[in-house]
Length: 320
Image (cartoon, rainbow, N blue to C red; front, side):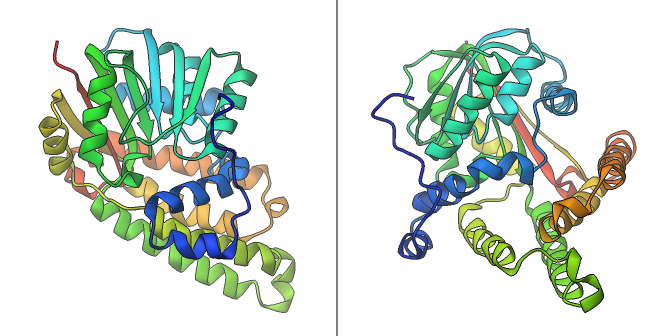
C-alpha cells in the first residue's frame, strides 16, 4: 500500500457502528477491519496443502479445467486475507498478483500473508465498483465470497471485464445461493442459541466463552447481517454476467449435505473456548466435511437441482 492508503480501523466506536446500519459500505469497512486479524482463525483459512487443494479444486470445478495455466497477472477482488489468490498462486495458477478490498485491514493482512509466502503481490484499498487499474491489465480476476457484499454486482462485473485483457477469465466462488443461505443461517442461529444456553449450566461452565467475547461475536453478527447484501440464483447470476458483457458464462454450485455439517460446526467453534477443541474434533469436522462434499459432488449433484446447493461459482471470459 502507498502512504495515501487509508489505515485500518479495528476498533469502531459505538457511533460508527450505529451509522453503519444505514451505510452498507461503511459497514463493510468496519466489519472487515474488525475481523481482519482473526479472520483466518475464524474461518479456518490457511495457506498450506489443505487450502491450496481447496482453492485449486474450486477453480478447476468452475472452469472444468478449460484454462491455460499459469496466468501471468491476476487480481483478487475483495481479497479478504488473500485466501483465494494466494492459494491459487501456490497451486501454480497465477504468477503475480494484485489484491484489492474496501477494508484497509484486510489488504494489510493479505499483503502480509503474500510476503510470508514469498509471492509477488501488490495491494490497494479499493471499491469493487470502481477498480483502480487500467483497462486490459489482468489475465485473470478472481474472488471468493465477495460478490454478495457488493451493492451493484453488475457494475462490478463490468469493471472486472474492463480490467481484464481480451480473452481473460474471471472466476468468483464461494457465493451463497438464495436457498442455501436460508438454511445455513437458520442452522447457525439454532446452533448458537443451543450452545450459548446449554453452556450456562454450571457443570458446562468451562465450555462457555467469556461473556464479553460472546457479546463481541453478537455485535459482529449484527453487522454481518448488514454486510451480506445478496444471495444468488444460478440462472440469474449467469444472466447478470452476460448482461455485463461476459461470454462463455457458466455458474456451478457445490456443498449440500456438507453445508448442513459445516455451518453448525463453525458456529459451535465460535461459541466455545478454542482450547476445548483438539485434534479429534478437527479430524471429525474436516473429515466429515470432506466425505459429505464427495457425496455432494459424486452423487447428489446429479440428482438435486443446483439451486439447492449452498456455494455458487461463476466464470466467464472477456470477448477477444
